[in-house]
Amino acid sequence: MCRVHLIFDRYAPNSTKGASRSNRAGTNASHKHSLTLHTPLPAQNVVLTVTYNKVQLITLITKYFVDHVEDNTNELITAEHPIPISITNGQVRTQTNLRNTHEEADVIIVNQLVYLAARGASNITVVSDDTDVFVLLLYFYCKEKLTCEVFMQSPIASRRTVDIKATATKHSNIAEFLPGVHALSGSDTTSFLYGIGKATALKVLNSSKTLKLLGKQDVPMEDVVTEATLFIATCYVSRCCKNMSDTP
Image 1 (cartoon, helix red, strand yellow):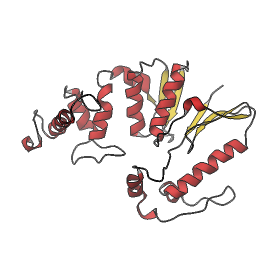
Image 2 (spheres, rainbow, N blue to C red; image 1 turned 90 degrees about the vertical axis):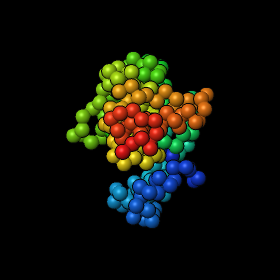
Image 3 (cartoon, rainbow, N blue to C red; image 1 turned 60 degrees about the horizontal axis):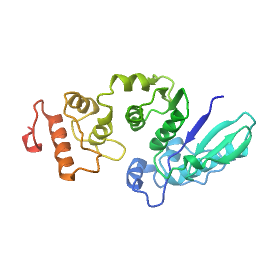
Image 4 (cartoon, rainbow, N blue to C red; image 1 turned 45 degrees about the horizontal axis):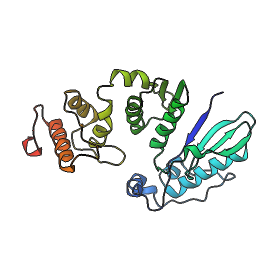
């Protein structure tokens, strides 16, 4: 039987993600609504760009699944509570071994994928079109030495499915550096630099300008900053340079 894992972002009151989420909200940030199962939903952008509305929607969806359990249901819901809810064969339980306090669904998705793979899952499909998820999947597929089939499928039907196993195998030589490159070239929590896109960053990475120190806790921060600066400076010029002053 196919098992479905439904995973939501979390929204802690004093979250460090609050500022970036507010920036994404734009002009709809002040439009708060009281959502119920029996009233029409507001426009999608109003719900999905306002934290207050999204939290309500997550609660409603979770409650609906729990209240409408069927005998053939086989799913796991990870919502605002650190411990996911498991619904199997008409029974609702908490799954304490998957307790996770991380806010980002991106991280929880990969955490649960590694958990499933370690327990013998042979074929896993992740429904997402988020670049952060893609980078994390490649990184952890190689780091954890996974062998199962993993596919990343977009919720938009016209977009193609990515074979994570094949991609990770082909690019295993750079997989460990991808999170660092992704963060430096712009991600959900870091701003992108003018004129540097993912293609440029990957080109520099493939030319052996790696980021071996970024993310390591046992090296001096000064060395990490020097390495990251060298990488970014090289993204702006074709030759290797030591700092941003060497760029045009």
